[in-house]
Image 1 (cartoon, rainbow, N blue to C red):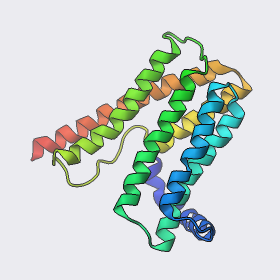
Image 2 (cartoon, rainbow, N blue to C red):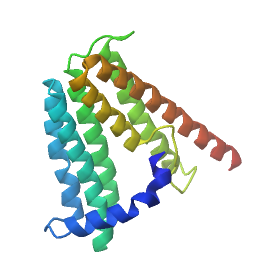
Image 3 (cartoon, rainbow, N blue to C red):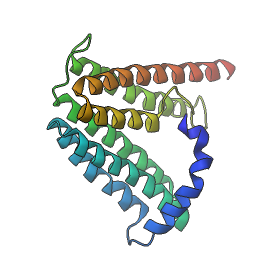
Image 4 (cartoon, rainbow, N blue to C red):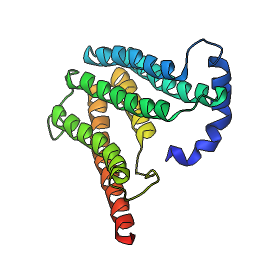
Length: 201
């Protein structure tokens, strides 16, 4: 969804890239650095320090934006950089889920840990459904689309953390349920897209 409006963020990306390119770090170093606030956010979530967790989680997401911006502005876009960025994205999301496992979220229809397992599985399958299509040579281009992609998932999680701080953990549990649903629906949607492509080949 947000990817459809990528052009609107281009001017912001350029400004961020110009600003942060003045710091002597390579794009890949910026990517690796994003794991630090993600680890802190995970620990803070586990400690039920949801406001501070949201701040550090936002910092990790912003650094993920910085690395690509710096790479484009400085002309250092590489295939390995894109690969590293994708891999670290998975680690950041996984760290958030680990923190949520220890946050003591309330039961809503099912125990919170069962919703978290569904969220983890859906997140993994959303990514794998896309990667497997290229691996099996069904398509040479990256599969796009999904009800909610990573950016939207991060926004929902961020809002859930803020609501947990302001109103209580039941709202964070509801955010996890929503994430469990949309990740698996997005994975199924991508599988359906790949199936249609395979039937035409």
